[in-house]
Length: 311
Image (cartoon, rainbow, N blue to C red):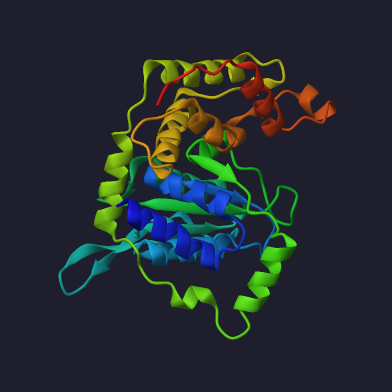
């Protein structure tokens, strides 16, 4: 399976130029059975990344464009009366897929966001008292425009906490932008993307990630980092137990992607800001001091001692 992962990363790099660090984090989140939030301006490759992943990983793909008039049944599905069978039949919504791209999630109503929240947490939808499990694997990649853009609103903390990581694509550097222009002169590389994995292999990879060994020293280090966020003077709301579990799972995936079956502290450091950044609620003083959540988390990484773990 290591060869498959290597091929997946290589093929994805052919489509998404110069963003291997970001795409690796998204692959880690999939392997850790988590969901991804991409916050960025339009046009930097968020949708292309989700499409490329779905094709390369052999996942059934659905996209829903969130607008103020999208209702919960668009997400979860609905039941309707069938005259021939004289019964009510469930009509699946957008979530009945392996990879759901929730585009501009912060432009829809809180009621619709809540409908998606249940699916992300429980991996099933409840319609008219009946539960319907989503296919496995199931991953949500949501995009949001920066808060303050036209028609946007902040996502509530309960919604943000369901995403394993939050990251940004950012603009490509000059060389990568030239590569994008060159590769798309005649055909979009996305059109030639072929499946490297299938659903069964992804589930097997997820099972292998769960088995990655974590020593007590590294577990204690993760707990120390979580507690440091709760005690920091500029943080009002630190890393919750759910967020701490997400950090551990994501670090396991980082170790697996590095070709190891055991975790080292560097794996935790590698993903800490992506897992914790969107979960932090800062004190008002942080804004006056012009400190961002990621800057504060970087300071915590420097102050919390890292254990020495021999590989």
